Length: 190
Image (tube, rainbow, N blue to C red; front, side, top):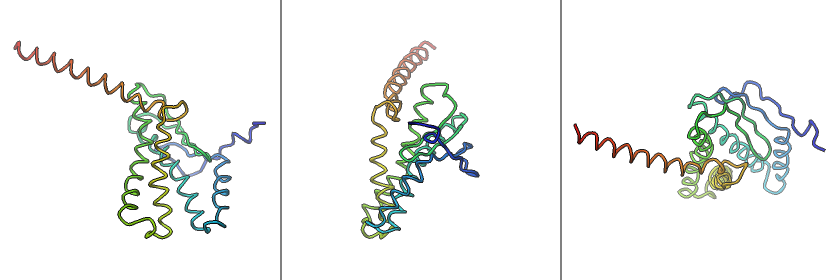
Protein backbone atom coordinates (compact mmCIF):
# COMPACT_ATOMS: atom_id res chain seq x y z
CA UNK A 1 0.00 0.00 0.00
CA UNK A 2 1.73 3.13 -1.24
CA UNK A 3 -0.18 5.91 0.44
CA UNK A 4 0.49 9.58 0.95
CA UNK A 5 3.03 8.78 3.69
CA UNK A 6 5.39 7.18 1.14
CA UNK A 7 5.52 10.43 -0.85
CA UNK A 8 6.07 12.81 2.08
CA UNK A 9 8.71 15.50 1.60
CA UNK A 10 9.68 18.02 4.26
CA UNK A 11 11.00 21.39 3.11
CA UNK A 12 14.16 22.41 4.93
CA UNK A 13 13.52 26.05 5.73
CA UNK A 14 16.32 28.57 5.25
CA UNK A 15 18.22 26.21 2.94
CA UNK A 16 18.38 26.97 -0.76
CA UNK A 17 20.69 25.39 -3.31
CA UNK A 18 21.32 27.76 -6.21
CA UNK A 19 17.95 29.32 -5.55
CA UNK A 20 16.05 26.05 -5.15
CA UNK A 21 14.42 24.86 -1.95
CA UNK A 22 15.73 21.65 -0.39
CA UNK A 23 13.23 18.90 0.39
CA UNK A 24 14.04 15.86 2.51
CA UNK A 25 12.10 12.60 2.20
CA UNK A 26 10.91 10.76 5.28
CA UNK A 27 13.35 7.95 4.44
CA UNK A 28 16.39 10.14 5.23
CA UNK A 29 16.00 9.97 9.03
CA UNK A 30 15.14 6.27 8.72
CA UNK A 31 18.32 5.43 6.76
CA UNK A 32 20.36 7.73 9.03
CA UNK A 33 18.99 5.95 12.09
CA UNK A 34 19.83 2.57 10.54
CA UNK A 35 23.39 3.70 9.80
CA UNK A 36 23.82 5.17 13.28
CA UNK A 37 22.35 2.02 14.84
CA UNK A 38 25.45 0.25 13.56
CA UNK A 39 27.35 2.22 16.18
CA UNK A 40 27.47 -0.86 18.42
CA UNK A 41 29.73 -2.40 15.75
CA UNK A 42 31.96 0.55 14.89
CA UNK A 43 31.38 3.15 17.57
CA UNK A 44 29.02 6.14 17.59
CA UNK A 45 31.35 8.68 15.95
CA UNK A 46 32.17 6.42 13.04
CA UNK A 47 28.49 5.60 12.51
CA UNK A 48 27.50 9.28 12.59
CA UNK A 49 30.38 10.13 10.24
CA UNK A 50 29.24 7.42 7.81
CA UNK A 51 25.65 8.70 7.83
CA UNK A 52 26.65 12.34 7.33
CA UNK A 53 29.10 11.51 4.51
CA UNK A 54 26.57 9.28 2.76
CA UNK A 55 23.94 12.02 2.60
CA UNK A 56 26.57 14.66 1.81
CA UNK A 57 27.52 12.70 -1.32
CA UNK A 58 23.95 12.55 -2.54
CA UNK A 59 23.46 16.25 -1.82
CA UNK A 60 26.79 17.14 -3.46
CA UNK A 61 25.76 15.31 -6.63
CA UNK A 62 22.40 17.10 -6.81
CA UNK A 63 24.07 20.45 -6.06
CA UNK A 64 26.35 19.80 -9.06
CA UNK A 65 23.30 19.46 -11.31
CA UNK A 66 21.77 22.59 -9.76
CA UNK A 67 24.99 24.58 -10.21
CA UNK A 68 25.31 23.82 -13.93
CA UNK A 69 21.59 24.37 -14.59
CA UNK A 70 21.76 27.71 -12.74
CA UNK A 71 24.93 28.76 -14.64
CA UNK A 72 23.24 27.96 -17.95
CA UNK A 73 20.35 30.23 -16.98
CA UNK A 74 17.73 27.62 -16.11
CA UNK A 75 15.54 27.88 -13.04
CA UNK A 76 16.31 25.23 -10.46
CA UNK A 77 12.92 24.41 -8.98
CA UNK A 78 13.81 21.95 -6.20
CA UNK A 79 16.51 19.68 -4.84
CA UNK A 80 15.17 16.52 -3.23
CA UNK A 81 17.12 14.20 -0.95
CA UNK A 82 15.81 10.74 -0.09
CA UNK A 83 17.35 7.83 1.74
CA UNK A 84 18.68 6.17 -1.41
CA UNK A 85 19.01 8.90 -4.05
CA UNK A 86 18.43 12.55 -4.83
CA UNK A 87 16.76 14.54 -7.55
CA UNK A 88 17.39 17.98 -8.94
CA UNK A 89 14.33 19.47 -10.61
CA UNK A 90 15.10 22.19 -13.13
CA UNK A 91 13.51 23.98 -16.03
CA UNK A 92 13.58 21.90 -19.23
CA UNK A 93 16.81 22.59 -21.14
CA UNK A 94 16.50 24.24 -24.53
CA UNK A 95 19.14 22.04 -26.16
CA UNK A 96 20.39 18.50 -25.82
CA UNK A 97 23.88 19.91 -25.19
CA UNK A 98 22.62 21.81 -22.15
CA UNK A 99 20.84 18.72 -20.83
CA UNK A 100 24.01 16.66 -21.13
CA UNK A 101 26.04 19.40 -19.43
CA UNK A 102 23.60 19.56 -16.51
CA UNK A 103 23.70 15.79 -16.10
CA UNK A 104 27.51 15.76 -16.05
CA UNK A 105 27.45 18.49 -13.38
CA UNK A 106 26.48 15.95 -10.71
CA UNK A 107 29.31 13.54 -11.45
CA UNK A 108 31.87 16.34 -11.85
CA UNK A 109 30.89 17.71 -8.43
CA UNK A 110 31.48 14.26 -6.98
CA UNK A 111 34.86 13.97 -8.71
CA UNK A 112 35.88 17.41 -7.41
CA UNK A 113 35.65 15.95 -3.91
CA UNK A 114 36.61 12.32 -4.62
CA UNK A 115 39.93 12.89 -6.36
CA UNK A 116 41.51 14.99 -3.55
CA UNK A 117 40.24 12.46 -0.97
CA UNK A 118 41.67 9.48 -2.87
CA UNK A 119 44.96 11.38 -3.23
CA UNK A 120 45.00 12.21 0.50
CA UNK A 121 44.35 8.58 1.41
CA UNK A 122 47.14 7.44 -0.91
CA UNK A 123 49.65 9.99 0.40
CA UNK A 124 48.91 9.83 4.12
CA UNK A 125 47.22 6.47 4.51
CA UNK A 126 43.65 6.19 5.72
CA UNK A 127 44.71 4.42 8.91
CA UNK A 128 46.87 7.43 9.84
CA UNK A 129 43.88 9.78 9.70
CA UNK A 130 42.04 8.37 12.73
CA UNK A 131 38.30 9.08 12.71
CA UNK A 132 38.72 11.26 9.62
CA UNK A 133 39.92 8.17 7.73
CA UNK A 134 36.35 6.91 7.37
CA UNK A 135 35.19 10.27 5.97
CA UNK A 136 38.13 10.27 3.55
CA UNK A 137 37.26 6.72 2.44
CA UNK A 138 33.57 7.51 1.90
CA UNK A 139 34.19 10.86 0.22
CA UNK A 140 36.93 9.30 -1.88
CA UNK A 141 36.68 5.66 -2.88
CA UNK A 142 32.97 5.14 -2.10
CA UNK A 143 32.20 8.39 -3.91
CA UNK A 144 34.00 7.13 -7.04
CA UNK A 145 32.03 3.87 -6.93
CA UNK A 146 28.73 5.77 -6.58
CA UNK A 147 29.69 8.03 -9.51
CA UNK A 148 30.62 5.04 -11.68
CA UNK A 149 27.33 3.27 -10.91
CA UNK A 150 25.40 6.46 -11.67
CA UNK A 151 27.12 6.67 -15.07
CA UNK A 152 25.83 3.26 -16.17
CA UNK A 153 23.77 3.79 -19.34
CA UNK A 154 20.57 2.68 -17.65
CA UNK A 155 17.24 4.48 -17.60
CA UNK A 156 16.81 6.28 -14.29
CA UNK A 157 20.53 6.90 -13.87
CA UNK A 158 22.49 9.86 -15.21
CA UNK A 159 24.40 7.61 -17.60
CA UNK A 160 21.29 7.27 -19.77
CA UNK A 161 21.77 10.92 -20.77
CA UNK A 162 25.43 11.59 -19.92
CA UNK A 163 26.87 9.36 -22.62
CA UNK A 164 25.06 11.34 -25.31
CA UNK A 165 28.17 13.50 -25.01
CA UNK A 166 29.94 11.11 -27.40
CA UNK A 167 27.66 11.53 -30.45
CA UNK A 168 27.37 15.26 -29.66
CA UNK A 169 31.17 15.51 -29.59
CA UNK A 170 31.44 13.70 -32.92
CA UNK A 171 28.86 16.03 -34.48
CA UNK A 172 30.74 19.06 -33.14
CA UNK A 173 34.06 17.73 -34.46
CA UNK A 174 32.58 17.06 -37.93
CA UNK A 175 30.91 20.48 -38.08
CA UNK A 176 34.17 22.15 -37.06
CA UNK A 177 36.06 20.23 -39.76
CA UNK A 178 33.53 21.24 -42.45
CA UNK A 179 33.65 24.86 -41.31
CA UNK A 180 37.45 24.83 -41.37
CA UNK A 181 37.50 23.46 -44.95
CA UNK A 182 34.95 26.03 -46.11
CA UNK A 183 36.93 28.84 -44.48
CA UNK A 184 40.18 27.69 -46.09
CA UNK A 185 38.51 27.60 -49.57
CA UNK A 186 37.06 31.04 -48.99
CA UNK A 187 40.39 32.53 -47.86
CA UNK A 188 42.21 31.04 -50.92
CA UNK A 189 39.78 32.79 -53.26
CA UNK A 190 40.36 36.21 -51.79
